[in-house]
Structure formats: C-alpha cells, structure tokens
Amino acid sequence: MLKELLAYVRPHRKVLVLGGLLGLVGSAAGLAMPLLAKFVVDAFGQDRSMAGPLLWLTLVVVVGAVVAAVGNYLMERTGEGIVLGARRRLVDRMLRLKVADVDRLKPGDLLSRVTGDTTLLRAVLTNGIVESISATFMLVGAIVMMVAMDGVLLLVTLLVLVVIGGLVASVMPKIQRAQTQAQESVGEMGAVLDRALQAYRTVKASGAEEREIAVVGEAAVQARDRGLQVAGWTSLAGVATSVAVQIAFLAVLGVGGARVAAGTLEISSLIAFLLYLFYLVMPIGQLIQGGVQLQQGLAAMKRIKEIEDLPAEPVGAAPAGSDEPVGVTFDDVVFRYGDDRPVVHDGVSFEVPPGGLTALVGPSGAGKSTVFALLERFYEHQAGLITIGGRDIRDWPLSELRSTLGYVEQDAPVLAGTLRENLLFAAQEATEDELNRAIARTRLDDLVARLPEGLDTAVGHRGVLLSGGERQRVAIARALLRKPRLLLLDEATSQLDAVNELRLREVIAEVAAETTVLVIAHRLSTVTNADRIVVMEGGGVRAVGTHAELVGADELYRELAATQFLVS
Image (cartoon, rainbow, N blue to C red; front, side, top):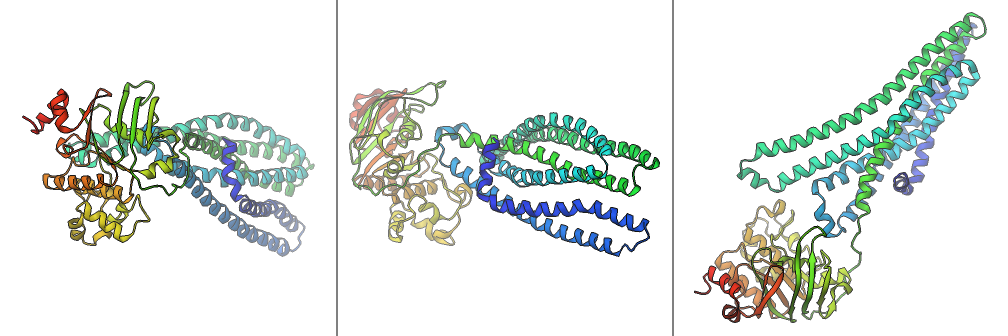
C-alpha cells in the first residue's frame, strides 16, 4: 500500500522537493532560535549590548516564517494536484469496470471513495510524508544542539521519550484499523442515503420519510462511532507525546537545576536546553501526526486499490464500420449471473436474420432482458455460442461491438442536462439535420416546441421534467442517432399512450426496413406485425413464428394474446 501511495507522488516530486526544502529552511530558522536566545541571555549577564543578538533573532524569525509559508503553499497546491489526479484515475477506472462488478457495488460507497478517500491521500502525501521528513531534520538538529549543551541532560530526555515512543508505536496499527472501518461506515451511510434519494418520490408517496431518516441516521451514528474510535486512538497518541515532553521537562529541570547549583552547568545553557526541549514538541508532534496520517492514508489507499484491482473493459476507439444490418444467433447458450445464482438461460437457441423486426415475448423472468445484456457483453455467457453478423461475439472488440448496437433500456434513463445533450449523448458527431430527423421520427417535435428553450432546455435530474413516454422517445431518438446495425428495444412502448404507441410502431417498422430491430415486448400489440416472434419461458425458447402462426400453434402465446384482447 505504501508503494501505491508513493506512486501518486511521483508526478509531483519536483515541487514536493522544493516545498520540502523551503520547509527545512524554515525549520532551520526555528532551530537557531534557542541558541540565539542563549546569546541574548549571555549578553544580558555580561552587561553587553543586546541589540545585535535581538536583531539577529528577529531577522531569523521573520525570514523563517516567510520561507515556511511559501513552502506550505507549495505543499497545499501539490496536495490539490494529487487529489485531482487520484480522482481522475479512480473515476476512469470506475466508468470502465464491468457491469457485473458495478452491480455488486453500492453507488453511495463508490462516491465516498472518490470524494472522502482521495481527500485523505492529500494529507498523507504532502503533510504526512514531507512534514515528517522536515520534523526528522528538526528532531535530529535539536538533539545535536542538546548534545552540545549537555550530554547528561540529553540521556535523561531520551530515556523518557523512548518509553513513550514505544507506546505510541503500538497504537499506530489500531489507528489504521479504526480508520478503515470509519471510511467503510461513511461509504455505507452514503449508500443508504443514495438509495432514498434515487427513490425520492416513492419515499414521499409511501409516507416513509421518518423510516428512511431513521435508517440513514442509524448509519450516520455508526459512522460517528467509528470516527470516535479513530479520534480516541489519535488522542491517546497525542497525549502520550505531551506527557513525554512534560515528564522530560521535569526530569531535566531537576537534574539540570542540581548541576547549576553544583556549578557544573551554566544557567544560560540550562535555559537553552529547556528551550530545545520544548522545541522538540513540534517535530515529535509532526512525526506522530505523520504516522497517524500515514495510517489513514493506507486505509484510504486500501479502499481505492479495491476498485483499481477490479478488471476493466479494454479501451479503444470504435472503427468506422459498415451500415449493413447484422443478424444474431444464439446457439445452446447457458448463462447465470453468479455461481450461487440460478440458471437464467438454459440452452437458449434462436436466430435473427439481418434486417426486419424480431420480437422476444414471454412471462417475466423468462430471460428476455438477459438476451440484450449478453449482446452488449455486459455479462459473459458460460456456455454455447452467440454470434453477431456471423462472428463470435467474443471476437468483437468491445468498442466496435457497442458502436454496432443501439440500446434502449427498459427504464429509458435520461441524464441531467439539456434535451440536446441527451439526444446527442451516444452520437456527438451527429449533424443538426440528423438530429432534427430523429426528433421528427420519434414524434418529439411537440415537446421541443413546448419547452421554453427548445433543445437547450434542462430536463432535470434523471429527466424528471419529462413524462415517462417522453423519456422513452428521447431514449429511442438517442439510439437512432447512433445509426446502429442492430437496434435493441427493451419495452420501448410500455409508458406510451395508444396514439403514441401507434406512431412508434410506425417508426419501428420504418427503422426495421433499414436495419435489424430486436424488441422485447410485454404489450403484444406493438409486435403483432413482427417478421418473427420468439416465445421464451423458464430460460429457454419454446416457439418461434409470426403472430398468426403462434396464436394457432403455441398455447402460452395464445394465452398472452388473449389476456391482451388480441384474440378471443
């Protein structure tokens, strides 16, 4: 984990070195102050002018403060750069993860890793490491000066500090463990809150505000308790440092006072030694803080590394391909979502010829939407063969495969932003004429005319300002602008009224004349004119044919049609 942490520092090492050197200069200025104070006391005792020593002391204080401030600014600036790099790297990884891995994770926890965990890196990679180096220099310098003052008093000091230092070292692993648990609790709280916000209207309509507030509150209490554990161990380390210095001061004062009384030590040397002793408080405190921050950073790095270690999909630009429609073949395909999950596809076989309209129908849970998930390679099938355009789907580069497909999901998601941004989301290079044609084909003209700023009107979070039918048509227009060779429509008309459903059926028929269209439909009225209908049940295919053929030949299809008043 430490090696991974330092990898984030490498691009900024020059600025960090400069900032660290400036910090060392500031520390050196502070290191000289007790010695200059000794000169002032000696001048006072020898009845000499104190103007010179006081002037030097003032100059050292001012220069040291200015240099330290510049160094600190460089550290903070570098810290922000490190956080930016970590966040970009983590977001890049997250958005390239496999769908199967993201399905196991919680969105709120992922957000916590991008925001909270990366912020912890700034402290450990700038203040933690660099200031610890500076503190080490200050500590060594102070000890050297204390050796010059009096070796006996130094031994007394070190004896106390070593004993307390051992106690602090034993606390550090506990801090890392507690910090990991605290970050996990914050992520869990984010996940619980995200769940409520994603279903905000359902929470309101169900009168479940108090219940959800209690659930989030419970998660917040757990995060607080874990945070208190971190604070407790950190406070123990800090108190141990303070007590060590206080005990060392009393011991040095006792031994040193006795030596001054015996005439074996000058009073100015004892004063300078005590000043150096108090000077140790800052570097020791920085080392303790650096150790605490290192443990926090290691805990954050562990959570970040968990995401970075997940396999990512390959990166690549989609090559320019043919516009010809492609066919699809499922040959004895077996698939389950996990080793501990039931089989979803158990020997699924069917063919979709290039061009035309093919529909998948059947009861819920038959595996229809899974067909689309496998075609998009969101998941990998365990057995059998899937081909697109006669080519094994696993031989397609992902970028090329997905550029070939147009996909309209069941819930037709619309992103926050303008209507134009949503329509062009999958086809940034589309021209204005192509955009207007897609709008006309999906009957969005009235919506564009009605919106106050037309295409540049914001549609709200998840398209909340649009109706369900409008969101579906936006999703279809977005897919059409991609100019797919295979168009996948999952329940594309489920939220449309009868008039708009009829219009969309006309659009689908028009598109099917140009490309291959594969539709999942519970509402059979949208697919009665399909070239072929594949009836699925229980993870398999039970019948294939036209509407008329299936009504006469398949009992399940006839029952589905009868319940929707398509047959008597």
